[in-house]
Amino acid sequence: MRDVVVFPHEVKRGLVKFEVELREFNGETDHVHLLVHYPPKVALSKLINSLKGVSSRYLRAEYTARLNRIGMGSVFWSRSYFAGSCGGAPLTVIRQYIEGQKRPI
Image (cartoon, rainbow, N blue to C red):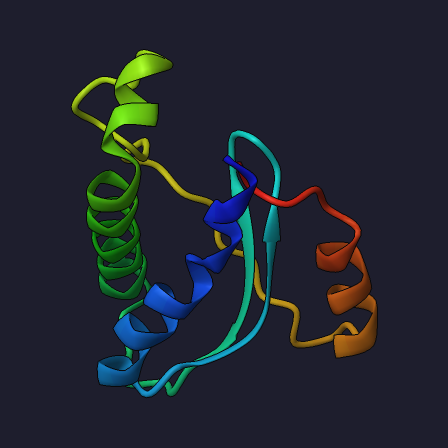
């Protein structure tokens, strides 16, 4: 499923309504890393819920057979998430960390 890497384009479309800039994206087999810049008016929980919804719908529509074959249930993402602020760290350091992750499958 390496071609799932095209999925950030779908996420970018979902970010437009929140006025969010996606600065970096990468991940592992069981999670993703996103570096975003968002305005203070955006509730982070709503943003993440939207991103999970958009990406889940896209991946299920495009890869239904593959997901069924590997035994994915009706839930694509867990209900939990981790969000961390990187206001004090240089963006180049954060980007390097995210780029160093494996691509999501």
